[in-house]
Length: 229
Ligand code: CA
Image 1: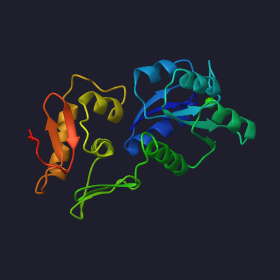
Image 2 (image 1 turned 30 degrees about the vertical axis):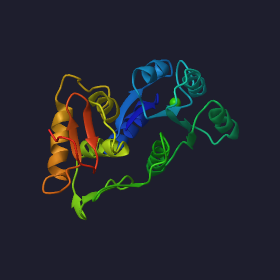
Image 3 (image 1 turned 45 degrees about the vertical axis):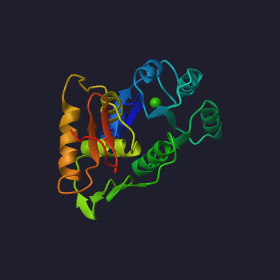
Image 4 (image 1 turned 135 degrees about the vertical axis):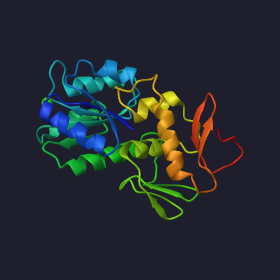
């Protein structure tokens, strides 16, 4: 899942981005309100974390612009004071939720998870595909009841495929939602990660869950009938 973090205080931005990346999110950072609309149009973000007090353009204005441009991305606002008017203005501007600074990082993570869950459709916290089990809160993954250790990036890729279970997920979708703006579209990183996931998820198990559809993308599914390349 890919997040745009809009925060002008460098220390806060750095700390939040680091913490979110450790939780396997792909994170881009913007330090003022001016570039957000452009970036949000360019990249298909799953969530925008938007500070209210920003240089050039405040968070309320940015939020209204995003909604006026009919971008349905989830927006979590960060407000510096516990002011009811700020919260009302934020929600009226189109924010989905807000958090008052200073906040506990774990609360931020819980709100992020909640917003991402209701993104396209309400997803359960535990995703099950055949005997594969993915706990989206603890990031624990198991197959046939035995625990599978994944790196943050492997987990992010698996969860993204699992959110679209039975659907073909294109390479560009994966690049956009699992990697951040530093992703090199000419690299073979996605293929490398798919291979690693296959080794960990499918080796020694039936049915094979990760399928490659040549020229189309990848599919995580328990159903058979497609050629596994
Ligand atoms: Ca600020």
